Structure formats: structure tokens, C-alpha cells
Amino acid sequence: MRENYTTVGDSANAEILIQKSRFIGHAARAETEQQALNFIDSIKLLHRTATHNCSAYLIGEHDSIQKANDDGEPSGTAGFPMLEVLKKQGLKDTVLVVTRYYGGIKLGSGGLIRAYGKSASAAIAAAGVVERKLHHLMKASIDYTWLGKLENEIRQSPYPLDRLEYMEGVDIYIYVPVEKEQEFIDWINEMTNGQADVSITSSEFLEFSKS
Image 1: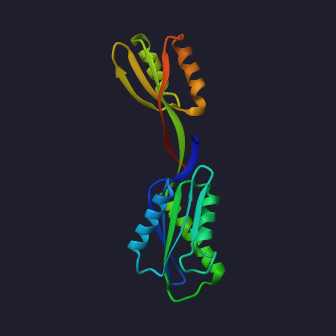
Image 2: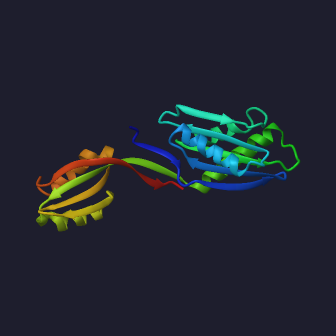
């Protein structure tokens, strides 16, 4: 499983006007090709009277699935520049659709490439960019005598505190980046003189805004 990658935050759209043509960029997260295709179909349905609904998506840890569709625009002038925007921004698991309502003025190949690239970038900016980092949810089981010190130190640390559970002892649940696992265990043991029982309960991605 990959540990860290960058993708878009929320689904969003952004509209720009170029030479009387309306370009509406749409961006969304898609973790499978089917999710990407479903999103593209939903935009096509929403803008079924548009002149073009061009699309591009990049999916998989190693960008194993990447597609670009010009939807009637001259070959290589729409989907490909949108795909290039995804690559240049280092985005994974992301789908783009740019809807065009033709305004009566031809843009030429260079103009189209710039227009679709600009629309794709605008949609991504509207959606926001996040970094997803794989974390372990660690459980530190301690005696009550260590609670005050340990809770205070954790709250001042870079490790996000999830919750505390009070039983015969106290179970403290903390998110730890996977690459920091041993460092965290050593830190807890140092503070408790080795009297904490530290274990991994699960692994999940946390998201951090980059925009």
C-alpha cells in the first residue's frame, strides 16, 4: 500500500470565458476507473447541450490508468493538455471534465490547448489539493499514574490524538505516520520507563491541505 500521495479535495467546478466560449472545468477524486467514468457521465448528463465535454483521468499508485478524451475537439487539443496538468501537479486518483459551450470564434490548436489546460487548472484550484498520508492508529495502554504526563506530551506533539478510553487502565489512541512508528514507540517507552503497552490497531489515510 502506498504511504503518501497528492489528490484533489472536494469535487468542484470553475468557469472561465475565452473568446466568447464558456469553459467549465470540473474536478473530482476517483479511486477506480469506474468512479472516473461515472463522474464523466454525470457531467455529460448535466451539460448534455454543451458543444464538448472533454475529459482526462489519472488513477493508481503508479499512474497505471490514464486516459484522455477530446470529445470532438481536434486530436490532442483538449484531453491531453488536461492530463498533462494532472501530471505536472503530481495528482493521483483524479478525474477532470472540461465542458465547452462554443461562442462562435475558433481558437486554433494552440488556443484550445491553452484554454483546456487553464480550465483544468482552475477546476483543481477550486477543488483544493490535499496530501493523503498513511497513518497507523496506535494504542498506548498505560496505568493511570502516567496519564497526566503522557496526555500532556501527546497533545503538544505532532501526533494527532484520536481518543482516550478509561478502563482498569487508560488506552490512548494516537495517529502516527507509518514511517514514524518505531520513533513513536521509543518515545512512549522513554516517557513511561517502558511501562506502556504500544500496539497498532489499524491503518488509514489522513488528509492535509496543500492549497
